[in-house]
Length: 233
Image (tube, rainbow, N blue to C red):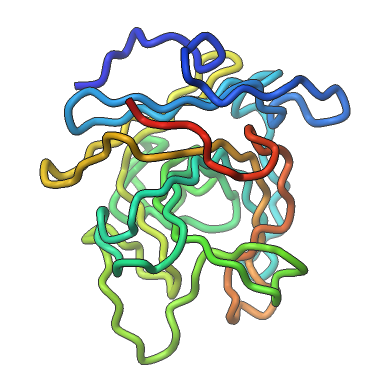
């Protein structure tokens, strides 16, 4: 299993380092992103300039226009490694929160006995990202599933018409650090995979229509240019 004592990303050899920027919200100002593996478990880390997880979006009261915040690790892993179609887009691990909806129907993150009210609790997703000009010039979306399409989907897909999985890995917060321990099938070779770190805001389309879930703000990118220079060792 992953080594729980692994120290913060900013102290790790090979981490993608980023300069402090006082103009950015401290909880989303990335200082470093790192990923390491132990067997088939990969631990994704991100060190921020503030308290990771301290900022949450303001509730709007409905799905249409609902905002989300996320710590995201884009990778060069093929989406088929977690159950999506081969070559479907950019596979990324994300730690996310969104107070207006719950997209983890199998899990009770806040421990109150109700699996349908946990959206405001930080939780994990696999997302498949793709460029979509409908989200804005050069913007990304969580890729839509067209009507009547039948793509391959992970067993823990939450039922939304987008390429998003809710695998149940719990994000961990430690002051400036957020991390997620992610298990892969033994058949998946994660050695040498590249990654980056991103902090972002997303929003559900006001029409709840394609594209359903757009990246609306990129707060910070560890590499500065989304070149995915990190390598899982």
